[in-house]
Image (cartoon, rainbow, N blue to C red; front, side):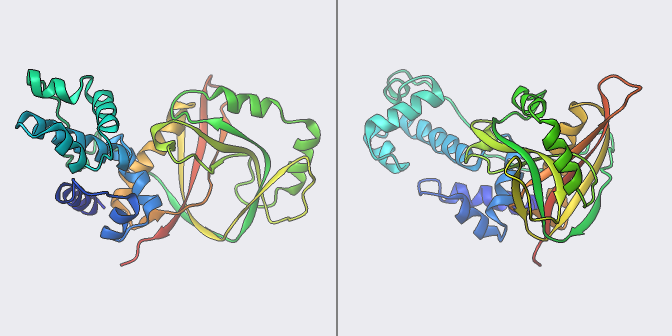
Amino acid sequence: MLHELNQVIDYIEDHITEEISLETLADYVGISDYHFGKVFFYLSGLTISEYIRNRKLSEANKDLLNGEKVTDVAFKYGYQSMDGFARAFKKWSGFLPSDAQKNGIAKSFPKLVFFITVKGGIAMEYKIVDKPAFNLVGVSKRVPMQFEGVNNEIVKLAQSITEEQRKEMHALQNMEPYEIVNASYDADANFLKEEGYLTHLIGVLTTEDQVSDQLDKVPVEACTWAVFPNEGPFPFTLQDTMARVYSQWLPTSDYEVVNAPNFSFTRMDKQKKDYAYSEVWIPVARKKK
């Protein structure tokens, strides 16, 4: 996967003045755009579109310093108007394109190179589980993106569950893991920037189709799951495990993530404050040779 990521970086450099889409890059290296977009973000901290925009504007800054006309530079990097280019350039750099030329001001954004440094030799325990189709059944809500700390909107969702809803979920639950799970799906397009919303469901796994109108039902197709157990301070350990799945495990594994809900469950330790055992379930498929 690291080889493919670096191939993509080289492709972007060779086509920096052209319009480049996530789908084009994923096709170029033979990886699904969903998987590629997630892995790229967790390794770089940027979405593909954000990285491309930064590289374009960095190269535009060089061209301006070399004396090229602002109008020519704007159209060269795909901007349809001078105003659009000026706004984007100022938002990125903090100064106008004309200031770059007049005053010789520069800001750069270098080309990325991907590699993984394993710190401390920390192994990731996991297992691969094949599951038939099932339904996620529970209560759901659109909540804001939040990769770290406690999401207060999810806390409010949990607190809103009624006793009747709990009883029905318990009666429907008939699949491993036999736990109350937290599932996430239908994220906004800019979810990797931790902006926008996704749907969060608190519920159970079931093969039953008959569900009352007091619960939401989300069908999930038969799939393979990579399961990552973890134990430690909550919620840090759970969130750190999720980040390491995308930044360390997926790039070096024989699997890629597929577009289906991921979920997790947590068992709080009654003897230790803010300490828990959790499992992260990620939907995956074997990479095509």
